[in-house]
Image (cartoon, rainbow, N blue to C red; front, side, top):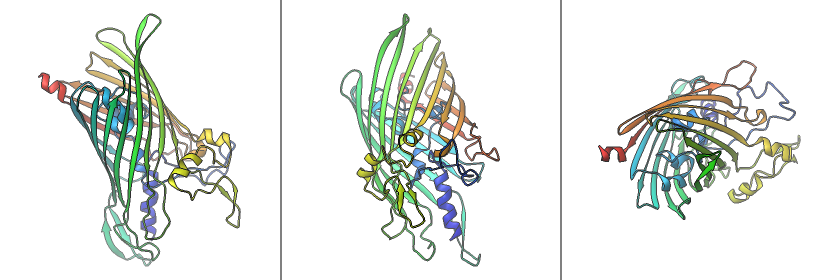
Length: 393
């Protein structure tokens, strides 16, 4: 059905795997053919919190907080307070449709000075969909949605280094059981895990003290998803994130930090086929999850140059005054042949006693024929509760 196909297409748009809607407008971009990587449940990679969202989607090595389970759960072992949680809301793809949104709840609890556990719940709503038959007659109304429930365990192995493991259950119901092209559909389900590490250490540069951090996270290592009873299954967005951050306090009232992340999907790149359906460049993408992870480092049809174009870059900065008011900015870059998302981000935060309120805003910087980007003007809102400050009060 056209409606069902449309739902799946919108879901693929709604993530860091977003490919430009005008993919057929250019046959050759930046010297290579457009060859984006798509997966099932791309909502898992959407930046859920306003702090990272305002800093160009960096977060693997930034200061630990309640949202660390998404970016790097290993950071939780270094969080200062015994307990905290955050609630985020993201109106998504408002340039396309008005009722898609992401809700995110995350929290943590310190077990002792070396260990911490985290919990997250992510709910992605695709709005109201009217189903019709081939004649255009209405056959039902449905609200497709997806969610993921996850938990993590983080432990310090030294005063400067920690490791973490996370697990999550993923549920994706895009069709409500409606048949597509005469084929019955089902909800997709998967189990996935994250492996993460975090290192932090104070250093001294130019007579000034700095806090240096390095982080890494391989997220969503899990089984493939299928929306039918057939054997056709799709990869979930297994992702490698590496990054660093450095910050300093100028005085008792002013402090600033900078962060840089890179991301690469660890799933097969689509190969090039001839008219007979045979692979002429690249490798067969129909492989197991483990094989797909290793294959993803060298299977691009364009060789090493295309592999490098599959890396996304993020850079962000944050300034705090009196530990109460924050201003943030960032930039995200994705190569034109891999989706072409480029955007600037801005945001602010205010902290008062036991809670903090963060806000971020996205400005499109990608080029397209009509100048539009479904991600343009995306806003995020996050409310963070600090139980340590509550206890002090």
